[in-house]
Image (cartoon, rainbow, N blue to C red):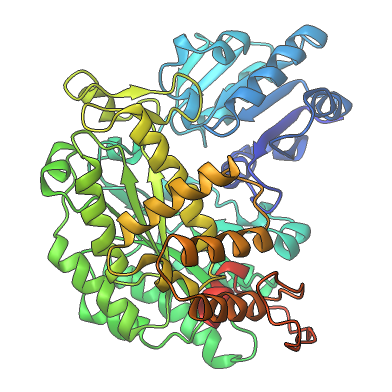
Length: 509
């Protein structure tokens, strides 16, 4: 039995909720009367409800996000049917805006909007005392970061062994990109650096070697960035056979020489940078209040690719107001020429509360009314074209971003990457009718058929590249177009790495 149960549905088991751990760490005298219970989307609702009820909570706090709101709504509805005495408190970005319009908020007892670190504890205290809070929807109080208990001791030994460890050196974002909820923050707030580095040291001593920073602007304050990078460089120097892996989100046009000098020192397989370009169209950038020096961003990406060993994951968004397919294609080709390891081709979503909604009428933005609220059409991209872009994005992920086809991809893209990959995407969808559940071996055979019959690639050249890629990443079956006498390699077990598998494939390629 636990008085306070904190729960959410994560996208995968490997994702451990940082938000729930902040809530528990800041419960004060009530922390020991609480428990964290995490689930994964796709689990049967009745089974989740059964596990929640087995804890017999008096208060249930649920983290609600764009990826879990529909399933969480069903959980709340069932709980209110079979156990109405439980006080259900919702929090998270999905319920922080437009709360009065959502079924899940109507079903729950209370909704904490915005920052919940200290407001949830305030609400819990009143509920456990039998008091009635003044309202059902309670605006979260933004506490001073120095007053928060940091959550990292809430990661269990199982988390350390098996899951991603999320950390943050700062909160908020000073930029105003209207597709993002962080545009509402107006600034970024750093945690006290010495205190944060002390927590990193404890996590490292516990065996954490894979760190994912959730900061929106890791390189905003260079002195703090350098101190954190130096922490990892010190560990690398002390134990070169036990390398850490760190993921950071960078501002693309802000990479001063001091940061470059530090980044150059990291060996392969220890750094990943997520870099949001989003659009290269200056008119679209202005329209969505995005400040970005494209020339500096391009120069920095080129430097990172040529002079550092960091893995680069760069974001573009299709469907921004006023951006046509032709404009997006030019930006895509420009980015491909810079050769980042991955291009995350995203489709615009209408996050609740994000200012992007102000363009709805002027640019005829039509969003999916259900999660994930993806854009369906605009005045510049009709529904059919948006569907083609969505398929392109999915196929790009399994063909290019997967890192499994480094020799084949240049044959597919040629000198016009967007146009040629869109043609392949259309062909593959017409042939398979699928954008998911395409087995790798089946994809290899489809690529061979397309390259030879439609792409104008010599069969011998295409076959050689495909076979090398397939064998190079563990494929052992005999391919239909493969020489029957060709030897097949014997797989060799390797040492377990801290580097995520996809990055490992890119590095090997």
